[in-house]
Image (cartoon, rainbow, N blue to C red; front, side):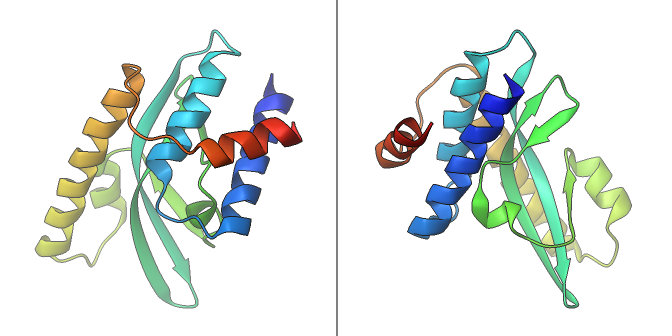
Amino acid sequence: MEEKIGKIVKLMREYQSKNGIKKACVTNTQYLYNKIVGYTDSKVRVIPVIVISNEKGKTKIVIHLVVSVDEELIIDPSYDVYRLKNKKYYVNIKDFICNVGNKTEEIVKKIISEYIDFKKISERINKGELLMYNKDQEEYIDKNM
């Protein structure tokens, strides 16, 4: 199972890189979630995360969705975030606030608001609701598996 999922994730990232796909974590996690649920009895969930990347002295903060397996493994199928250097994933707001200093109240409020929005989206995906669909990416993966 792990090998097959790894190949799916590799093909997803490859397709996104070749086609300049960015900010598509909803589509990406929903697709991967649906694939993993079909292959395992493990607890699979889509979860919101706060990603902090620091490259060449520049910090980037991204509110993002990933797939969690058994609450131990995080799989990020989105090439645009996966490729960021020196990144750390925070799975909840408390860990983010406790570990990242020098953020203004305004920035923290914005991050919390976006995190809550992504939490709502993740709950819809976990309930099996179809939110977004990228047929071209799915065809690319099916063709190359």
